[in-house]
Length: 154
Image: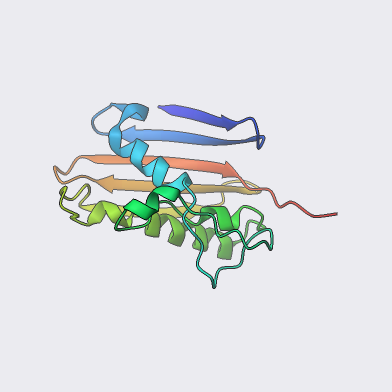
């Protein structure tokens, strides 16, 4: 099953391809939580280089009420050229954003394992392949592809 999510304001889109052993596709609760985890902006650390040289560390206001911060730092890479180094950072940021699935925060463990791999399947496109093994050993896998475009300031 595939879905295209398009942001009219930013003129960008994501292609998401789902594969899971339960066959419940895009409405799957875990898939939704993964997408929220990846595409909610995590607060940057003071040591992070911000893409627009501002002092806006972003972050999700709901983190005020959470033990663990939510989201990912993928937003820090949006203006970078797509290189192997940027792909590796994206995989690290995705791993960090999904680490909550492996912890028992009083609600039970959501996943036995989460494996994120990255690739550059075509020019200026980043693909993150996520494979999640749930506690019952069922597997959900999907790929999120995003066209990555550097923007130059005039």
